Amino acid sequence: MSESDSRGDEAFVLESVRRVLAGDIEAFSAIVNAHQKLIAADLARRLPGQDVQEVAQDAFVRAFRALPSYRHEAPFRIWMLRIARHAAMDFWRRKYRRRSLLFSELDDAALNHVETAQQARLAEQAADRDAREAAREWLETALRRLSPDDRAVITLVELEERSMEDAARRLGCGLAAVKVRAFRARRRLKAVLEDLRPEKDYAP
Image 1 (cartoon, helix red, strand yellow):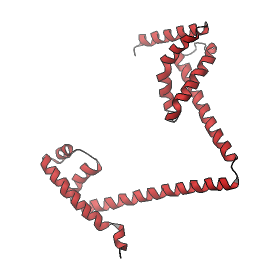
Image 2: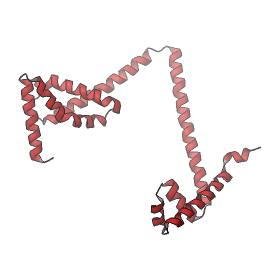
Image 3: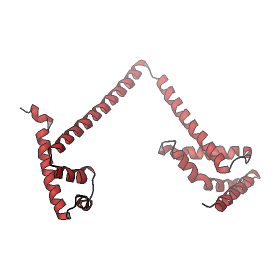
Image 4: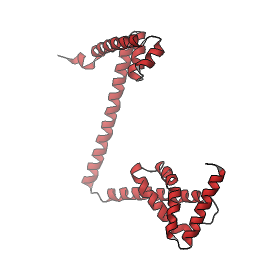
């Protein structure tokens, strides 16, 4: 947006403000239309996505009520952003207040149940991390057992998910050749992974 466009938009908004203050309530829709994308984008960085529209509406209601206090000390969009950010802060205050009230109303048995559920969730998350780490180490060990050529094609095609055309270009070979190399490398990797499978050590 050019500087002249910006000045024109600001003049249009200020004229809409003047009309609202003069009693033309319908003119406030022009203010909303001029700022709704700006406000939504700013709130999207501060709130869960499903709450942006509700808080944006709250911000415009606040702006309408506070319009007589606008003193032209900053561009109107800056004034609107300040109101929207205060609305976002109030959203989080209400959310944490509700959460605190909820916990304060629970009896000891319910609190123990919540605590147990939280501990179970944390344990499950830790188990998932351990499983991912074990899988990563298993794959890295298998890759080290492959030849450099097999390791290169597996890394490009499987791990980095590059196209066959891109892999062929990077490896300096034809498309048909890289397809054959990828097929054979996958087969060798599968055999190595089966050989390294942890359960194999405990099989009856």
